Structure formats: C-alpha cells, structure tokens
Length: 178
Image 1 (spheres, rainbow, N blue to C red):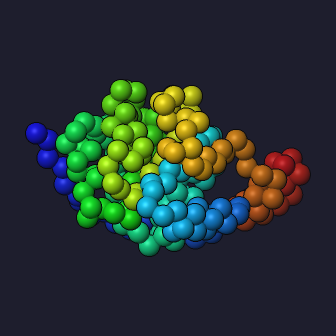
Image 2 (cartoon, rainbow, N blue to C red):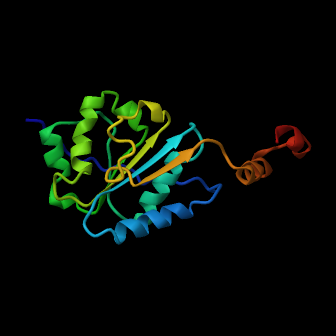
Image 3 (cartoon, rainbow, N blue to C red):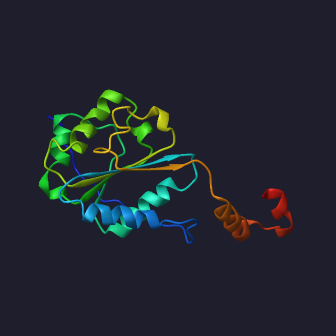
C-alpha cells in the first residue's frame, strides 16, 4: 500500500504586473461556490509562455482555498483514497503541464474516477497543458470532468502592446516589433 503525504511549499509569487484580462477566474470561482456539492474541472491549454500557469496561480490565490500541487504521476486506489479524504474538501488539485506529469493515459484514469464523483468530494481540478493533443481523450469534451477550458493560442494585440511598452528598451523599434 502506497503512502502519500503533503509537503508545504512557498506561496505562489505573482509577477509585479499582470498583462491581459483575468476576470474569467472570478467567474470560475463564483461557479464553484454556487455549484452545490460537485467537483469543478478547469483546463488551461495552449502555447508555452502565454499565461496559463499565472492564470491558474492567480485563481488559486483569489480562491483562498488550500492547493494540492501534484508533480508526479500518482494513481491507483491508494491515491484515490488519499485525495478523496474529507479533510481535503474544498481544495484545489493543481497539475501544471498535465500532459508531462501524466504521460500514461491509463494512469490518469485515477483522476477521472475522482473527477466523475465516484467519491463524495468537492474539489477543483485545475490543469494546465502546453500540448492539448497529448491529454487523455477521456478527459476531453466531458462537461462533468472539465467544465471550463480556456485555450491560449496567441497573445491579444493589447497585451502585446502593453508588454512592448513596458519592456522595450528602444521605443523607436516598436513598429518593427509589432
């Protein structure tokens, strides 16, 4: 039988300035609060460096909920029993770069069992992915598993203008960078 334990990590550190609109994170939290006793699945996927992890961390901070950060491919009945412990009710299960942590589709099925409500839990499953194509197909397109999926395909023009305005050391190059 496997043993699992929690190790306290440093708090998430936000950049000194956030670019773009993160209002969607407030809507997700409101949905969770008013969603009776069900789990909530959130997926942020797309290009590396477009703000998925920052958005996920901001959501976690704003929620005020405990966060369980999963960094290795854990699975099986012992893992399911650990995460379904009532002490973790109203917690966030955060898996950054899900497709890298859960490379084996069969091993990720333990999470699907939890997400489906096979156990009486009220958790938020917060997942990020750079390569959505490598995500377990059983996880995709199932509203009871992933209710919100935000795709990061490119930065919007205003965000690019803001970043360039703040970080470009030679303003005369702005037109060529844009």
